[in-house]
Each structure stands twice: as structure tokens, then as C-alpha cells.
Image 1 (cartoon, protein in one colour):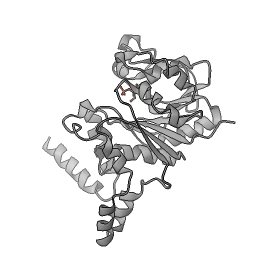
Image 2: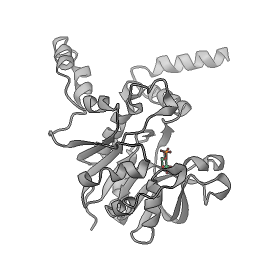
Image 3: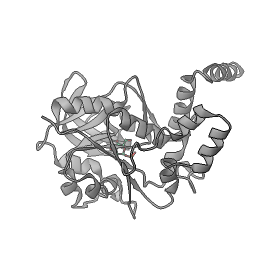
Length: 293
Ligand code: G1P
């Protein structure tokens, strides 16, 4: 029997330097894909997977995220007065069902993803939990995290979302040494963060969804730095290989790297083409652009 996953950690302390100047005074997680901020997609995916407690690891200048998941009395009154119920519902649908289901803590210094997750240790406590990186937007028939929770109920242990990437991109990711593959699960035999292309053990990359056992915190507590001089989650996970079952979930869905300008643009186009209220206009515009070549 595996323990139910109830908590999810969103590391949102990053500076978003790749999107400057847009992210100078605004968190990168608030960048919209069509009309919804990246962080809201991440929260919706967690809710779809049945996760109830949301923990945000924030940093300076990230207050907009807290405000986004709170009531805005003035806005709600205005929309209600104008009878714009549909917009009102979509603007408030992400509120926690009960106060206290969302918690915020700050990572005071940007010391890496491993450090950000470690900052959530007291809020997570001694139970398995999920981590979602909002930059990795995944579009598919079923949310990636739901697919991972389903897999977790079968195999337990640690799980990461995994995807094949071009060999020349391996230095951007955590890369797996894969073992046997069964259905959508690949056994993880080794993990290395951002290897040189020539040293990458495979082309299977870690994508920003994790289910982790709480023992990860004791490995993160050592605070050893790795690639880029940062405390890496990948390094702590690698140390747990052999101690708990460890699998990559070859998820069904398309992943957009919204930490990258081109990936972000691709996501906006793909999501807009999926929206009944705008797909025709967008498609016509793309056709016009292609004709003008
Ligand atoms: C992080 C992780 C890396 C993972 C990637 C997925 O890197 O450290 O292992 O492959 O997310 O997006 P970052 O993109 O934050 O440098």
C-alpha cells in the first residue's frame, strides 16, 4: 500500500532572467498562455490529480502569485454588477476550497531547485509529495501529474516525468540512465544534472514533475552544490536510487518549455488553436502569415 499523495510543492522563487524585461517586476509564473497564468495551469493540474495542499516556495517580488489565489473583492463586485458571471467564475475558480489549503514560504536566496524544495520540508512533513515546475507546461488528454499519481499507486517510491529530447539538448536537463521499460514506466538506474552532451547517459530527460518520498529532505539537508554551483534536486534524487523504487513516467502529452521564449510562443499558439472562441481567427491569421511567407 502506498500513502496517498496530498501535498504539492511549487518552486516559484526563480528570477526569470530569460524573460527580462517582462519579468523585472512580475513573476515569470504569472506570464499568461492565452489568458491564464502559467502557475494556474500548474495548480489546475495538481487539483486534477487529487492533490489538496498547495505549498508555494516563493521569493522576493512574487506577491502577485499570492494575490492571484486570493479574492479580489473589487473585481468580483464589478463583474457581478455587470452580470459577467462566466468571467467571474473563471477568475475565482482557483480559490482554495477552504482557507489554509495554500501555504507560502520564502526561499531567501536563489540557491537552486534542490534548495527550494528543501525550504518546503516543514510544510510537507513526513509524507510523500509532488513537485511541479510551472515552466514545463504539459498539454494532453489527462494531466501529467494525474498520470504520475496513477503510476505511483502501482509502483510507489520516487517518480519523475521523463521524455526523449534531442541529444544536443541533453545538457539542459537532468538525464536518466534508463533500465527496463514496462508500459509507460522506465526504471531509473542513474541520474545526472545537465551533463555535457558527450557524457549524457541517454536522451531521456527529467521534465518538471516529481513524486518524492520525504527522505529526500535528509539528502537535501547536506546542501551540497552540483551543476551550476546550485543545490540540485537531481543530485539528491540520484542518491536515493537503490533505496526506494525509482521510475520515469513516459507521460502522454506535449510538453512546452515555457522558460524559453520560443517554447512559450509555441504554447500560446497551441492553446489558442484549442480554444473554440478564437481558434478560427488564429488559424486564419497563421494561414495569412504563411501565405505572405
Ligand atoms: C530543472 C531540473 C532539471 C530538469 C528541468 C526540466 O532544470 O533541474 O533536472 O530536467 O528542470 O525542465 P532548470 O530548467 O530549472 O534549469
